[in-house]
Length: 133
Image 1 (tube, rainbow, N blue to C red):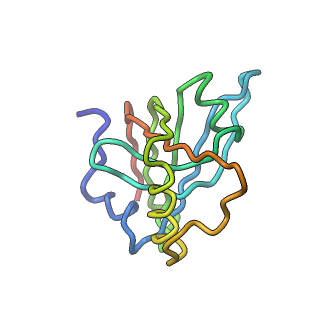
Image 2: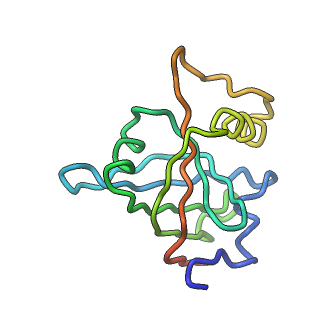
């Protein structure tokens, strides 16, 4: 499968690694936009979480093309790049950001929530995967 995450790179999504992803989306004028994100993997999709109204969320609703790089914190020259299409959902997004807060911060609840904030899960269906290191 062209979009499969190789087994030897699954550790980059583990709770032990706490590796950050850098997600690239396309601005309305075609310019790239890159943001660091907490990442997750469900066996099919690379997943991150954002809030409704943020630039990456608006970009992905308009144009679902996305690229994401996750590098190994112990060796930044070892990384995986995933390119594909994003789907967005608000369903279970609050529970997901809490899961990521547990992984990255060791906290049961995401502490940076803003009043009125609506969380969004972004699932990337990998179409192309490249690895290095």
